[in-house]
Image 1 (tube, rainbow, N blue to C red):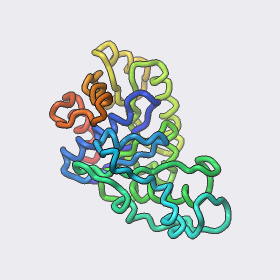
Image 2: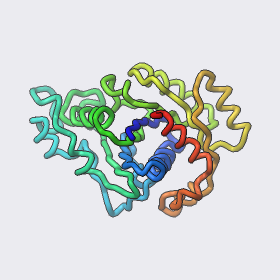
Image 3: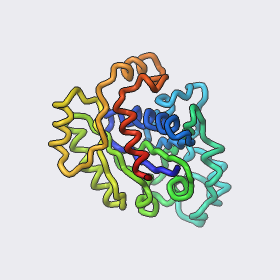
Length: 259
């Protein structure tokens, strides 16, 4: 199946851990390859997926020789002439690391000229995201920073959903409103909330009441296993059967978006 999900949220809400659990669960439940995109400047999705530290993955934005070859311009430069539609279809398979049916691809950041610069690195990243969303017949789940800036108008309308991870904290809930506006501005049609680290019905109701007009995907409870796994330097819920039952329900709802 083809399913494209972007995950956003304020720092500290558990967005990356949620992304990793969803990617692993989607791979297990659908038996499809899942491409997990780490598009957050603070890249740590590898740890959540259980990819060992001794298997470093090079961000796409740092593939200098490949970028120069595909765009015709040296990375780190601005202006001049270079191709705006470089070949990128081989990048997901060549430069990803896989575990348990999930291929991790790290986008990286553009160091020169800011996130909106017209430069070889940003051209590759935008072309790659367009390829992944529009032309890959895979499940693609993207761990985005709050600004969801790797997604442009050309691809956003084809994203099946933007899932905003929130917790009961006031700042997290306020960030959800800003992220929804950003998502709407670039044309994402379905924007939903996933409550994380909730402690019972009171927290769930607080999220519902404070975010009127949002569709709620579901709630994941506070989970001591995630804290313990972080301390021990391993991925949480090595056996997904030990994960909260709510995770399976949420995954079913995401799959249902394509039915």
